[in-house]
Image (cartoon, rainbow, N blue to C red; front, side, top):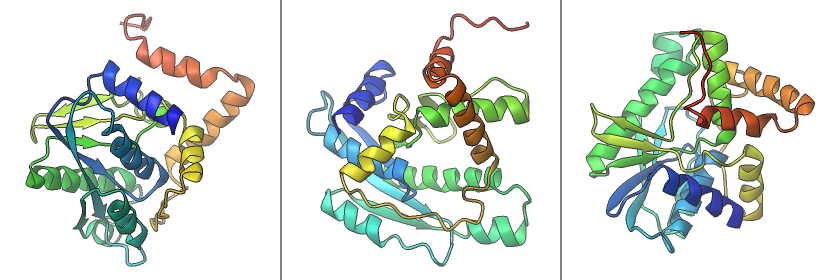
Length: 236
């Protein structure tokens, strides 16, 4: 966990993600990214220069075969309060709206439920498990399917909710996340969503893997380009 905590600390300090007295809700899907983030933030509490409160929140989409038992047990083991928000998002997206591309609507509704619960708990920040590969994939998705050069930011303020989204894992590669999950025996829960592994993001992930085979330093260069906000050379 030394590399994970080191990379996370760098992101937290560089972007001032956590301040003294913050109350942070970790958005936990049950997948590897959010489960590692929860564990890392719990460990970081022990030596963090600022003090903060921590809780875990899962927005259940309504899939009947979604077993959160391992997450419940893990949160009890590391002594983090855990909250489950039950929703009908699966029913609305797939059966009522019958969306052909359901991911965007699902994400919007899931984030809305997560932020509402965060406010109900009296917390002021939501920690999300996006890592460096997610940052790059999102930029490619935006360019290829929206015609924009854009990706999510390390810290985002939501004025309508008066909540900050923070992403402490943005300097870490997905391979590092996978390795840490295995080494620390952190449980994960597989997504029951039928769109899992079939989305546009998965197509972009495969595209980037091919790019990295040809350009081994490609991931680092792309992340460097995203961070280098003062040297864009684009059409005006």
